Image (cartoon, rainbow, N blue to C red; front, side, top):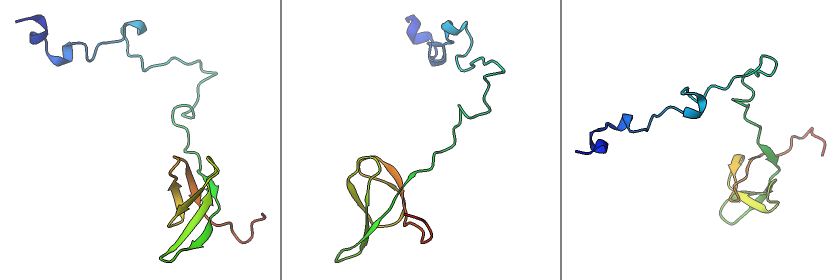
Length: 103
């Protein structure tokens, strides 16, 4: 038998240590105490999706909402309000302006 057939899969290099990091895992990154961040860089808060203001469109079968996409600036139609993924790949929140908000 050759060497490859006798070597178990775990020893074949699938879990080889990184030699560039001195044989240690490359996951640990040393930081100065002055530059250390408490999770902001590793786990940033989810940014709030942009808001698109809908225009109600009554079709013959249902009420739809048309809104100008904040990214591609074309009109997209949706059948409900809330967080939406547009056909162009944009992610935004579809909601009406509150009555007390200034335009």
